Structures are given as C-alpha cells and as structure tokens.
Image 1: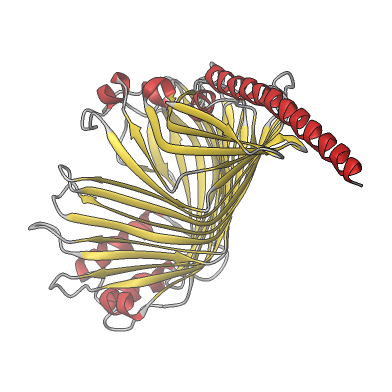
Image 2 (image 1 turned 30 degrees about the horizontal axis):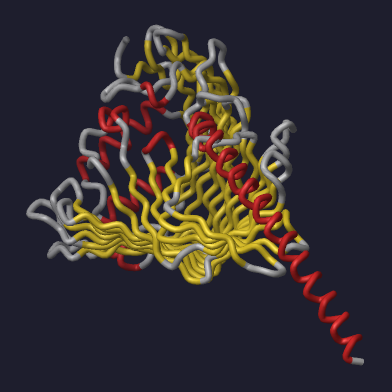
Length: 503
C-alpha cells in the first residue's frame, strides 16, 4: 500500500510539473495574443501603453493585470488613463477574454488646431472623470477574425467640470448592456450594435449668451439602441456623418419615456424661467446611405411647459401633442447632380392649457379645440460642399431643384388651411417658378373671433379682411376661400394680383 501511494504521489507530482510547464508555455501564447490585440488596435488608430503587465491565474486560467494603462485615440485628441485593468481567459475558452474596468479612470480631450481654428472659444484641454460599478467588457474571437464585444455595467458615470468657465456636466448610464459584432477584416460586412440602457440621467450647467446661469437636466427610461455600419473606425464614421464618405450606417433608438428641463437664472434683459419637455414611448431611425441622410421617427404623449419668473402677465403654460410623426431625407454629400429629398410631418391633437388660453384669449371668444398639422413635400436638391467647409456667415451649402408640395394641412381655432402645388427653382439665380393652390375654410369667422378676443385690434381686423377679399375668391362650399399663388420671373401673383411688386 505504501509503495502504491508513493507511485500515485509521484505520478501526481509529474502531472503537476507537466501541467506547470504547459501553463507556462501558454503564458507566452497569452503574451503573444495581447501583443496582437494591441497591434490590431494600433492599426485602427488606437495606441495602448502600460507600465507593467503581469500574468497569473494558475492553474485553470490566465489573468492579466496591466497597470498605469494609457489609451490614445484620434492622433492624440483623446487620451484615457486607467490605474489598472484586469483581463481573464479560461483554459477551456481561450478565445473569450473578460476585462474588468477600474472603478475610476479619466479622459483628456485635446482639440486639434483645426478644431480650435473653427471654434476659438475651445479650451486647450478638457478632463472627464469616470466612475463605474461592476463594469465588464467581454470579447470573443481573435484579432482579424470575427469578433463579439459585450459590455455590461450596473452604473457608468462621466463627470466634467471647469471652474474658469463655470461649466460642468454629468451623465450616468444605469443598467447598461451592449453587444457589438465585428466581422472578419477580410469580409465586406457591417459592424452591428445592440444596446439596452435602463436609465440615462444627465445634468449640465453653464452660462448662456445673455450672461445668465443656465442648467440642462433630464432622463431617458428604457432606451434601446440597435444599428449597423460599414465604417470600421471612428475617423471613417465621422467622415460619413459629414458627407465625406458613402459608406453607410443605420441606427434605431427607442425609449419608453423621457423628460428634459432647461432653467435659466435670468439677466437684466431676460427673465428667469424654465422649459420642460416630456414624452411617452418614442422611436427614431437614422440612416446614411450613399451620402443621403434619412430620419424617421414618432413620439407619443409629448408635453412642453414654459414657466416664467417674470413679473408680467404671461406666466407660461403647457402644450400637449398626442402624436408626432416625421420623415426627412436629404443629400449631404456634395454631388454635381440634383438628388431627391422628402419632408413629412404630422402633429395630431395639439392642445394648450388654460394658462396660455387665458393670456391669448381673455374674453373666451376663440375655438379652443385641438389643432393639427400635416406636411408632405418632396423634390430635388444637392449639397454644394461639405458642412465642415462652410465659413461663418456663408449661405447654406445646398441648392434646390424643385419642390412638390403634395399636402399642407393646418387646422386650429376652428379654421382649416390647405395648400398644394409644384415649384421649380432656377439655379444659380435661386428663382422659384411655379404655382401653389391654397384653400381656406372659416377664416372670416376666425378673424371675427380674434377681434372679439382682443388679439386682433380693430384697425388690423379691417386690413386683414381687405387683404382676404382682395387676394382670395369664394370657394365651392360655404365659408371657403381659395387662392392661386403663381411665381415667375416677373414676381409673385395671388389670383392675378401682384404681391410685393416686381422682382
């Protein structure tokens, strides 16, 4: 028995020594992989250095600890400094690396000369401090091959403050998870993203142009983000956003509710007050393909409230909009030829509270029913230069070819207005040529109600009625007025009557 125990013990020692040799040999492979990771990031414009790297985790894992880590991006414009990072890979899953972020680290942002030339008010450097709770990044896959990056954190807080400008900012992401899939570098496939954020909380303080202290704060609940991009680096993505590349991306953002508030302390020329906006479920799609920017979205139960601290009669009020839908498509990459564009907007059940109505209509003469607005237009246009190339005071960098107003509907105060038509814009003179048909319903009654409410003084009421009779004709239905607006090189004409004189 004793001999058997000695033999078994000897075998165990040999196995342990052999396993130790294998584990130590694997350490070199881990070092080689880490070096490959660093080289891969450097090729994408991110450079990583550290003062010390140690490998532990014997016997069933490799755990790497890097101290005094410095990550430099965008040619030195962004520098992250982390006291320590630990990364662990199990022997059974060597392609899977779990990285634990430190509880605190910093980011230094140094604007380059081009940025400071465009915005002279920029500081030489900005310092952002981060705090994390249970923040972890997991990567699966080898450099150059397909890669999955998963991030999770109970809390991720970024704080910035500058005493010289009395500016501060804090943003917290709570309940954060994300999943980014990178295809193999040899594949012409997009990078995909999916993220969930339980709560986004933010506050920023500074000074307005009037010299008054101003505070922005708010929160977003249940945010969901998903998208894909053909861009493989931050530089390429920035070039896409400015129209410099045709590589596309798409991004979808949803939230269950949101609220934001702006408060200004006031100045000698402007009163103090606050503006609050809130909403229920909302969604937006942002897409860039071949230099065309597409925006689509909707929001439910939007509410906007203004509260004034002034001593005047107007103390603010609240506007509720039950439904907001929009779609917007416009070229932003410069092209020699005109490109299609479209613009759609629908706002349904727009209601103002009694505070606003009491200020506008103290005599209770106006129809206070919900208002609505529908806009549907399309046409052609082109960008003449990149947005980053526009100089201060220069005209917008686009030219319009033609506009088709398919539908414009407005109903409020008991009045309805409708317009549709087609206009061609002659370039380079920017001269509109075409016509628009306008139909008004119950406008006479609304003018009388405005006069009775005190909003429209008697002399202005007379002028408005004269213009209405001069520029519109009776329509087919009772209370209907019509007008045809014609634009040509000679000027603008309404039902044959010149408007504003010749050009």
